[in-house]
Length: 113
Length: 135
Picture (cartoon, rainbow over the protein chains, first blue to last red):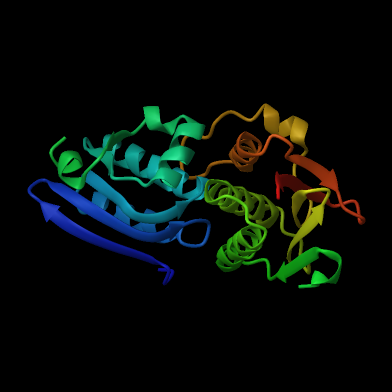
């Protein structure tokens, strides 16, 4: 995984929180994609992705999140986004993906959704 | 960099690992010329998307090339490398639905952020993504 992206996971009941810190772009996004795929493969298909530590995300990162959402739904689960910062919210809004994802102000809200 | 003519250039290997370097280069110059922070954030996204397009069309032996020129109160950003799809084709590209998002979305993002964004030809006839901000 690229060193400028830090991923941590925390199981909260049947929800797994994936905390993402750093910049998500063409170079780092594969690490996030792999982590989500591994979790879903391990049966953890109810994910809350904590974006509070994401300073930057481009369309590659969005693509990974969309792919993760699809994987989770296909496995009978869900993928919610938590606490995105303004730059990430903006790119979600420009692309219309803010209407696709369940977006919450806090991780706790996302984990209880 | 070649600051003598108010034109700054950066040449990088065609490797995704250097996209962050391109963003840093662009944002540092923008801050130097006192561009507002919300515009800097847009600029970083546009540069990242332009680099993604350029890398997707990478030709052997060609690196990722970026230039910033100051002209008539504007900073003009250019990112180039290899053969990129034409603008007309991109406009018909549907919004991708998974992680294999097409480079069309990159251009849509750039034009959403900077209305004057265009794909032009460089001196060698290679496509260049160009847009500008007021400085």
